[in-house]
Image (cartoon, rainbow, N blue to C red):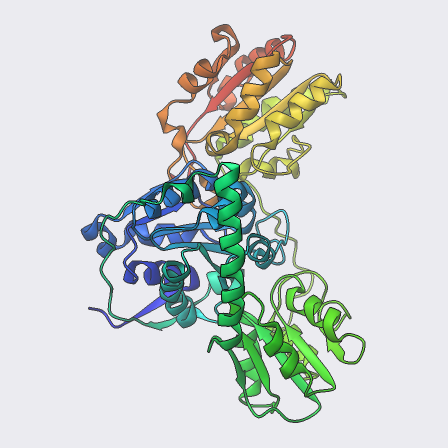
Length: 522
């Protein structure tokens, strides 16, 4: 067995799950979590053991499938980005009420600074809301070890457990020392059927059990070695650091600082431990990547008699990710620029690849928009969102996965014409089908362009579930055959494509144009 590996934070979680004896991995690609599933899919150990490792159509189906696996007594890992947990929120919250039979771990990667996301939401709030435990590693070694411990805790408390990491940890590498792999659980299906059948009588009983578990988890958190004080509790100032915030603090504390620190790696929040620590000082600096979760608790409890420095008082920026430099400034240290910023360099905004089929799609779509000032193109999330930027300027919205078709329908309901929807093949199978079904049910006057590039391109070229056949899906949902077209986005086909689009825009019902050419990267 290999004893050490150089791993991304994402990969450390995947390796930790494999070494914990996971039997199934479930996911939908989304930066910064994608590499978790990719590592499992390519892992030799997973192939030999025949670990389930296929992409799901979305995060909700991924979590539900994992819930079925743990119902059967196995261990399962579900990975997603933070906004993916919104999609999976229904089974997630209810899985805390059913509890789990085998071990269930959700690896959720948050994206402060919105490098590739629509918001900066913090998964710790979800864990608190659902009353489930959450681990927050500070580095790759902890990511690996805490994943293994998360499966143990899941089986001990019979609850799903979250591993939260943020972009910098997910996408940076470090040497990780591996532990001895553990065997998979034997098949052992659930026999207490009341647990998983959430009719009101059962749900009420299960919820009371969850409240009892919550009290035990709070006690566990207060006593856990995962919430640990480093240094001697003395002086006027202390630090409370969570997750990668502790890694940044450690870089300075070893050389320039002598400040005691309470390192938080496990939630529910150890409230008594935090307050007992804070009461020794006049000032507390809170270092956490994401929203001011711990800072808000401390401010509510001790804000009247303790100086609390963090995101809420401007010591750290209110938005964006925590960085080594912002950490240094919060601790009162001088930062030195290692690299000077070049002057007068042109900007390099993101753009579609040369030869991208979406460029030709926007070429003929743009003509419709230019000739009709009332036309609006409601877009979705994917490479084609870059159609918002010059030189295309061919889309007008991007809110969440699947919103393009339903927003176009709502605009048409309000009297807007023409209302167009632009959605990719993978996003369509993720969350576009139900919106199209709504439109078909009312025969809404919208034109849907499904840009089929045969892959999930924005996250690196993962398989698209549209392989099952977009035409058959659309016809099965009820799209009329005469208003379903397959187009090829090429400059030589522009006039033909434009003619079809113009005709369907005037149709007083649902039209679907599948615009198909493979991504140039695949």
